[in-house]
Image (cartoon, rainbow, N blue to C red; front, top):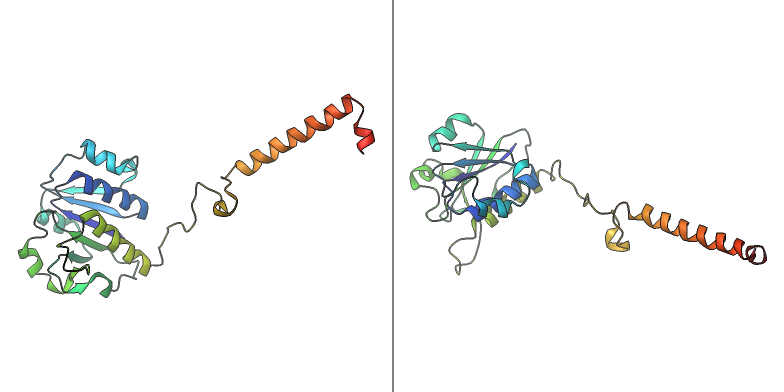
Length: 203
């Protein structure tokens, strides 16, 4: 199973966006206290839109609490890492994969990183930027994992529109609606021709 872990997140808008990404990808979200907001925060709910009720998430009192309750492959994201996020093999879908991201202000504590140097990674970027937005980082890495797993259980077609929507612009269900409208127009047309005695001459 794929998991995103936020170590002491501070900004509700970031966490709200990450919640939406987790729902979209079937990823479980783990939140390690202290949090810089309440789960009921209006900003968080706004960014999560209407998807928070579909979110699989768990909250922990501290990092030790998280470690005691979870086992699997832990990966740590830091701007001080030396390996790109694409350098690891995430393809085994039977493994529990945990992508761990630090707080917006200071990241993951050095004490934690030092004990996991072989699993520390960095998203490559230019020297003009210190770090990417937290929610962007999560989305980038989650989709790299899913790419290696051939996007397991995700939809390759938009479920709310017709498969050929780009070509014909017709929503699902609109095809039958248009057929019914055309049928009624055709029926009305011939019925009125019969009323004035023209249908036999046309036929």
